[in-house]
Length: 414
Ligand code: FIX
Ligand code: ZN
Image (cartoon, rainbow, N blue to C red; front, side, top):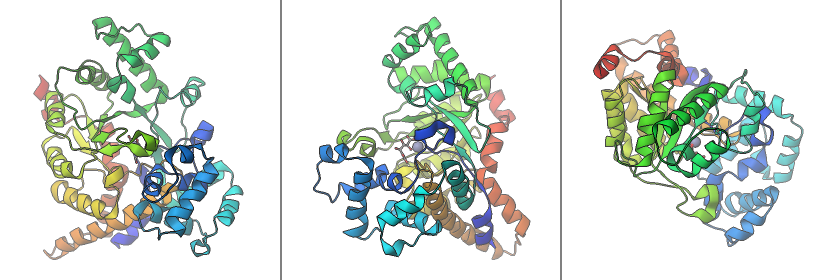
């Protein structure tokens, strides 16, 4: 019964890198994009003799062929990211044992993107998709400036990494766009940076404001990042009720020659997150963290602060052994008050495998947990299992977005 409920309950995917089809080429899909996923690029360079420069000079189709040949033909595709391509093709009804890239390409060529988007969402049983939207992206910004408003399943989150991590350089952009900012965070600059955030969060109808952070992130601290968080981001989020999503643990460009595939991981001192939650009870925080070593501490922090909602097994954590370990631990620590998974899909079709693989593990963990209850004589009804799974698959997140902070939180600040 649990397996059937988990397999059939539609999910809100709360963090992806997908786009509404209205964003045109920014929405990646199809076999070539599936193969040229940065997870698979990194794995290909474990084997290939092709140099970085040669690889980046290839056209997308040629890159896809090289990856297919190296990871699927010359070796068996047993890594999680390789297996994901095969799960996706299989669920789409393609015969993977033919190993025929060109016939797979022909199958994709017959689709129109609007129909294919609906097909993927239906197969993956995803009812909404949260995009990652950056005003600093030159391809994306004009779509918003031309008045795009999301009415369908695609929702928005305002991504602000350059504002926090690359000030004052990002200030030059703000100045160009008409915000009266200076490199120093004086009062006028602070209010103009807040105006910038307010304009973009409103334009995007953002669900939350988000940033990824390096392993060294500290709070409070005498540095620009910490000052921008304290003086600009947190007051903005508190004023308009946006949660601030922090994603610590990414060490960008560990190997820059791998481009997007070149980011690494490092562990964080979670005292920073503890301080954020404790010092800003008027703010709500979302958090997913990249290092395995931080996972238990994050679960414990969520027990301490109702203004913290933890979510997902992010990126290098999204492999079956760790999803099982992390999900099990979170349920044991927090019951149902977290969001176990997001897809982080960058290619539309990936929704199919990311959710298929995650559902299998989440259901396995839940079966064990309900079974433990059964041994005590507690009887769980089917409607209760459905209620619980809906809560894990977006209900808890929606309540966190909509809900007021517990009374203890608002009083703590007074
Ligand atoms: O920072 C992020 O949101 C990361 O998820 C991405 O930048 C990363 O490249 C990714 O695709 C992970 O799944
Ligand atoms: Zn992401």
